[in-house]
Length: 432
Image (cartoon, rainbow, N blue to C red; front, side, top):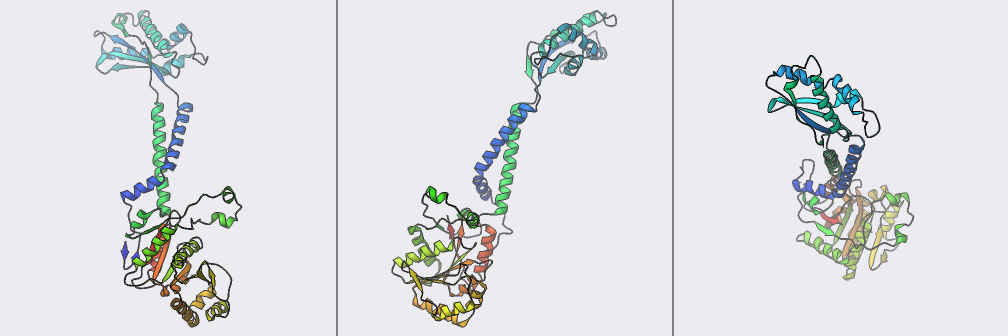
């Protein structure tokens, strides 16, 4: 949102398109985490989930037996008396060699009336060993019928109890491993998506034009670097810790892209010839030296007398040095590749010097002597030098490095530069 030349993002919501772009940027990370979830699910289901196999047979009670007696008989089916006889009759062991106990039988046996008939009961046996479940349930059925027939308390009603169907196979009735793997995968996918989205949103890195468009801009210049393959020596060359942690720029930039940038700058400032360009930065000392140099070379190759005033380096100096430079008594203006160069190192003394009448007159004189002047400055948020030099600029250029600069820094930098001159909003250049 832009109001009076300023932009803000604190109340800006996330559009569906922006959420999709966040997801797309982190797609490979999310896929990787999801694959880890698949492996975790397989590992968990294999090592920590006990399998369960069940075999089922059926008993039928004739109508001459009321439901109360049927329930009593049914409870006898899972009693220790029947279980003990099953263990004695079978004399089998689990696949791992462990002997089957009465408690193993009791804990695995169950009996329930079939839903559509209170006279038919499904009797089942469950175990982690599929090799025994059919044998155990069928032996339990036979033992139960035999127990009723030979027990004086039940002999009268034993003829009314019959075997409807014995078990012929077993089924896996434990927790599905596929469901566990799917649950792990889905959980890892959802969590990783939210985590990476939160990190991305919190970091707020500008990735492309669409991210800058969200601020209300529609005129964004995309500057492409001249990407060249680095040699192995360059890739593995020793660097200082400062170099390792410093954000990288991809300069130098394509000549055609720089030429288009020049035309873009000229066309962005209406009813005025652009001769002095202030080049500021969101972060210090990683972009301006390439962009200022490449832009100046384009002007110089067209036969234009071009000067770079660089304040983005850090060299100790004194106020008297800057004044001497302004008086032309310290040294002549250096020149390289047809581009003149003046260094005004960033320091507390430079701020005082830029406020002096001598330096002000000197810069105005330089503007009159050169066709184009590019003023390269440090980051505008933490440095007042860009604001002091902005009064000389016809155009203010704020490069944004995709994948490095974030939206909060961009907002702060843009808003500070927008206060330099009325109706002289900074031109945003997205550097890829």
